Image (spheres, rainbow, N blue to C red):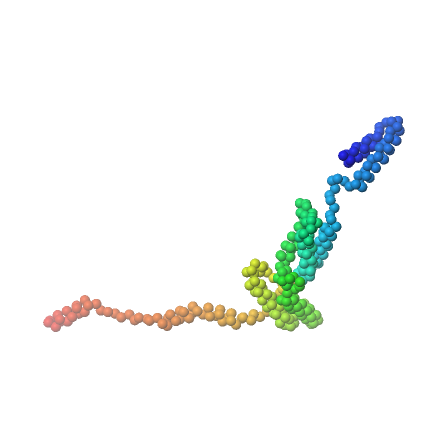
Length: 311
């Protein structure tokens, strides 16, 4: 009833203060000032005590957990945006992502089985329809899974795997080779002629391409266990960049090491019909046509001989 009484006093004070008659206003002004003073006192008293309908404040521990998650979300968002092109999400942001998982876990689980921990999880995660903390956590998890960063990291996600480190090292060596040879031939050759790049960087590029194909085969073999068959986005993007530079920009080509076996097998397959028909022709028996005289003709001939004999 206190808020209602306060509003009534305020309305009555405004009505008294804005009376229509001038003479009556002079008489009512002291009463209006007195009513306004009482109303101000009630408002101050009510404000100091706190409104009955106010939302409860978070506990200090809950506030600390929420602030830590907010800082972790901001740090991870900044890292993802800063390393979007060229894609370096997994190698640059895995520390931020791991820390954010720990911060969300501190909110979600009941630390020490205390009632305060249960209140933190309930008030922060499920107290409203939007559930912003849960939504943010799901967004980061889906982004991380779509990037397949787990395929670039160790099992404990503490750092890059050995194969990823080896691939990135070859990738950096390839880019260095491209840049070095471009600087060396820029003075002598036109911008459309990259013969030196193709010649001097062929070995490094071939090693990088072979390692990438090996990683793809190994990853497909492990894909039966439920993991994605794609490599992490960092490795895929690095290989795409290198292949575009090698084939489109420099117009280089890698000689296929299986050229001789492919040509031999293709020639053998094409020559099979010729061998088949030739062998069929040589081994088939050509029967000569032999005329066989019918017996009737022989008997008639003998009859003619007999008649000639008796004649």
